[in-house]
Image (tube, rainbow, N blue to C red):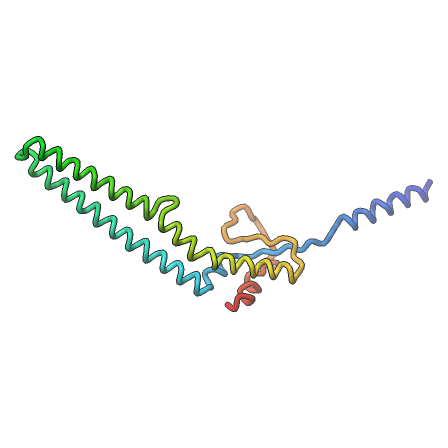
Amino acid sequence: MKKLIYSISFIFFSMGLMAQTTTKIAFVDTQVILEAMPAYQNAITQIDNLSAQWETELEQKYLEIDQMYKKYQAEAYLLPQNEKTKRENEIIEAEKAAKELQKKYFGPDGDLFQRRKALLQPIQNQLYQAINDYADANRIGAIFDISNNTALLFYDTKLDITNDIKKSLGL
């Protein structure tokens, strides 16, 4: 009976060891890497400049609309009804046009979103490829991005591969 208990214990112990595969994990801060990449910094600068240019253009349009409205208010009592209606419609059309332009530039699928995607996607792909290559070369089963993870409470900094990825990208 003792032999049977020892044999069963040995089998369960062996199965437990086999079940504990040594999957390596690592952590990387992609934001730190991206900020170290000159191409990323150039893309962000281009996006910021374009955004500022479009914001200035929109501000100018809204100033023009405001001036149109103030002029209308100042002259409204002197204007015949058909002229009042005409100017009101002009103001409404100018507002619609400005809102459409704002949506075109800054909407969910607007020009700024498309430009950001076109400029940043290749850079992000390069980073993710470097991470994948590193994982394959070092037989890492999982890599977690710690850049914006508010749920991660602790990780061993020995498992942080951020600098290794930066080196593989030549940074």
